[in-house]
Image 1 (cartoon, rainbow, N blue to C red):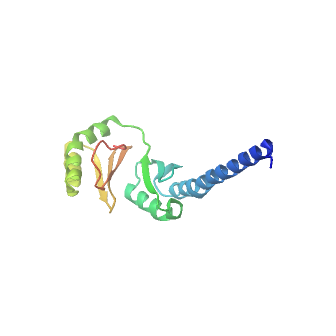
Image 2 (cartoon, rainbow, N blue to C red):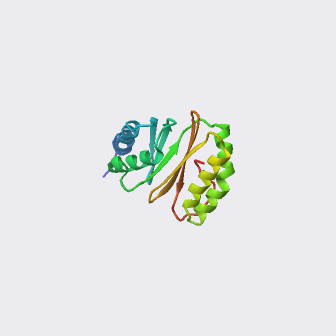
Image 3 (cartoon, one colour):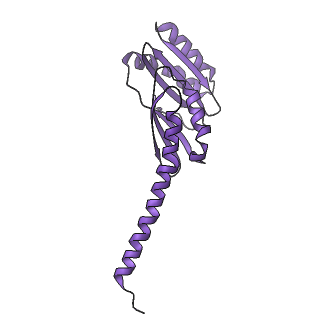
Length: 177
């Protein structure tokens, strides 16, 4: 039996194109687009963009200064659960950097990191209350659920949002801090 190279090569290329094209289409239209739609419809979300990998879904959002971070995370997690499935959800907040808010956050970072390390989450709220007393015009809000601690800092029209994971992993520099 003699195999002809050209038909075998064409069949292999078409099969690979169909397989990977279907995988890409599912990722784009079955995961990314529905999550973008869910996130964009939430109050406080200006824009949303999703990227999908094998075991993680990364949702990059731009939030308005009056956004409720914990509520947005919770609603995306529950309303987008069909798209997310068993993957982990990482919410990345895209925001313009404000020098005063960054300086205020850095001044409280030691107390926040210590509270997170010792799993004394009320210490995060205490650190934010103390920060509000030290920095005039600063509003700080902390919320917590079973997976994360959410910190929202606002000063005028500027806002900074930080999600601190409650998992038992080694603490380091938070990628969104």
